[in-house]
Each structure stands twice: as structure tokens, then as C-alpha cells.
Image (tube, rainbow, N blue to C red):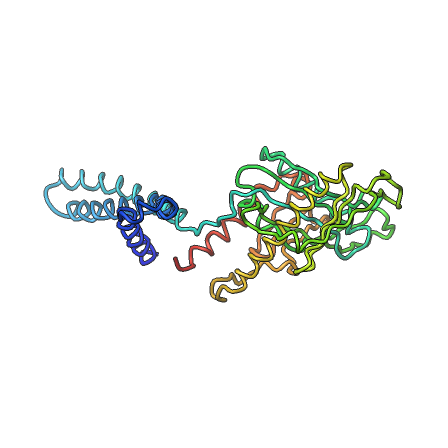
Length: 354
């Protein structure tokens, strides 16, 4: 860890030299870039330098505590306790500051929930997950904007897409992507046999225009009449929109709004976020294997969590963590679970090189 801290401090000194260069100061864009880089690591460098000062003072005080007269030793021992506490507190702050920053952490997210294997029971579970994340968002003071839903007619959903807006939403929800499994006895199961079903969750950072440049020539836009469950017509105008990104084959449909313009705007939001995520995955796949955790790569095909109704238990398989408040969790009380997962991955990132 200290090799990493020394490297950060050396980079900080280098940035100070660069930002003082008249050529850099004459270039507003370059100056902003260097100033931002400097500001990003300055808190860490300040804590590291304070830590070194406290550690040096502690070493000197401990030496005094073993020599000199009795009064001096007692004063030195008391001072050593105070310095030790300060040193440990600084070390904890440094470890937190060392965690690599994800540039997407402050972004809003697009959450996509889809029923997996299990038929109607999977659709009901997908509906449970949508409610869980919606309630959790409400507890955080976040705003949930439903983009589209495809209902089964019996309280379940085949697919739901929502945008969640708020402070640092992606930083809290980014590890929720994956296959979620439920084990419970369906209401229609007379014999009491436990069924296993799945639903998939995808959490994408909302992409802005500056994140993803989309050439209009690469889009095919089709319009059609919106329809409800069972094919019932919602309106007779061509307000529903289907956008196909020709180079990647990504298709997004939107029909919840009566306005074609609004449906197109929503569809573009989802398309932009999906393309942004695809680009992020390409970058992540290029990272060396030793920078990946042993418990998961983020692949959506992985089972990340099981919701066991008989035992009133949720188990996150990536970190081998269980909690026994299933009903409360499905009502949105998943803060502790999410924090535990985030803390685990932050600890893993501490092992990565600068």
C-alpha cells in the first residue's frame, strides 16, 4: 500500500510542476485537465503526508516513553496513545481514499429487469424485484421514472425498464447486475413443492450525449400503433417507436407515452445507455485477469443472489453473505446488503495497482 501512496505523491508533485508551466496555463483545456487530476488526488496526498508526520512523532514519543525520568515517561505514554489513535484514523481514511474512483459513480442509472426461467413464477419474481428496487430508491430520496413495462396480466412482468435519478445512484446499484434466483412455493402449488425461478437485472449508467456519439445514419426508426395486454389497441396513432442501431443490432422499443416524440426521447435514452455499457464492457474485457475478482466478473449469466422464502433468507453468492429479513428486503430495506457488497468490491479494488 505504501508503494502505491509514494507513487501517488510523486504524481502529485509532477502535476504541481505541470500546472505551473506557462504553456499549460496558456491552454485552458489542458489547464483544467491537469487541475482536475491534481484536485482528485490532493486529499489522499494530504492525508498521507499527515500520516507520515504523525508516524514520525509517534516513533519519537515511544522512544521517550522508554527513557528519561518517570514523569517524562508517563507524559510520553499518554501522548503515544493519542498519536496512535490519530495514526489509525488517518490510515482508515487513506484506505478509503485509495479505492479507485469509478467515473460513472455519480450517474443516474437505467435498470432493466426481465423474467428468466420459471414461467409465470419468474414473472412474479421480476415484479417483486422491481418493487424492491423502487422502494429502495424511495428510501434514498431518489426519483424513479418508469420507461416501459410488459405485464403478464397476473401481477407479473416480462420486462421492465426504469431510470433512477439521484445522488450517486450508480455507485450504490452497480453491483446488482446479474441473475437473481428465487426459491419458494407458488400460490398455485397444491403439494407445497418449492419451485426455483430466475430474473435478470441489468444496471446501466445513464449515458449523456457527450458519452456516446450516435450517427443518425446508423439508426432505423420504425413507428407503430401502441398496444396493451392481449393486443388491445391503446391508441390509433403511430406513437410507439422502435429504434434499431444498425452497427450493433441493438433494438429499443418504447410505447408508454402517447406522444411519438416522448417515446423517441425515452428510447434514445435507453439506447444510448446500452451502447455506453457495451463500450465499457469492451474496456473491462481488456483489463488483465489479475485485476478481476475471483468471485465474479460482472457477467450477467452468473447467479449472484438467491431469495429463499422457506428460510426467510437472502444469500449473495459473490461474497458468501446471508441476511434473514427477506420480507423487509423485498419492501426495499436492502441498504445493509448493498453496502456489504460495495464494501467487498472496494476492498478488492484496493489490491489493484495505481
